[in-house]
Image 1 (cartoon, rainbow, N blue to C red):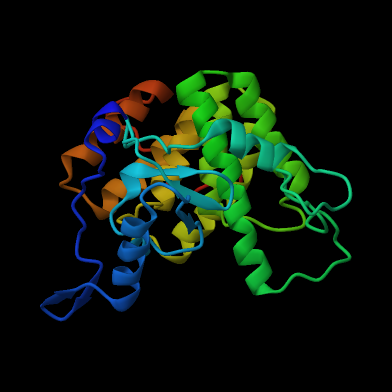
Image 2 (cartoon, one colour):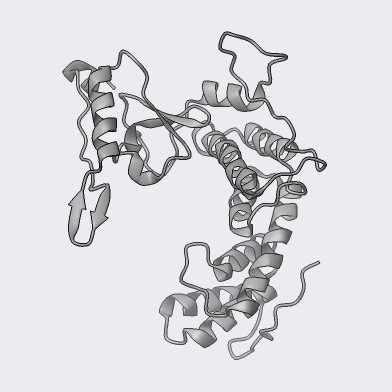
Length: 282
């Protein structure tokens, strides 16, 4: 960024990283991290592991570029906060290259060993950390989808993710599956989309049956069902979900709009009520 390079400094506002009651505080680790950044003067690269919590990033999200399992601090501000900033050449090399043997010098490319082998036991910690690799694939796919607008690379990236870390061996939470499903759909990978959407629909229906009032969370099952039913042109099923939602939130104008939308798409009359029972999806 010419402005940063010209001024020789990076300026940002660090939000309070820790809160103790009514008192905001910077912790010891925050002060140490700040000192490392200030002393480096761009002579050494500064990395933050993807496993670090958000409050460890010192509000530097606008200046972090993904290079695999780490974010690199760069003197360039994100031009679109809604898109993840990735260093595409480096991230792609890490995810797609797999060097033979071992070397004492740096070679990009992760060793994908054992993740698709059902005979290897993976404990809960392994399974949880594996999601970080899936996140890297999905961020790269989003880069190809929205920045390069290359649907072929989008599908190629997510296909490799499934090959390396198959769902059959390392299950995905249905809320996480919802994201690659939407990416596949946007890129036109309908065969793969149908596979993901089927699983998401099945799990979302179970969630609603277990807790019909779970409609306030970011990944709420009602929104997921409506999204995938609409994508699959299953408008009657979507209308049933919308009507069930309306029965619990009768005075919400947004819900009324959703009901009316799917009533039109399904061809139902204004007073016709579609059975609220969520039928099993083929």
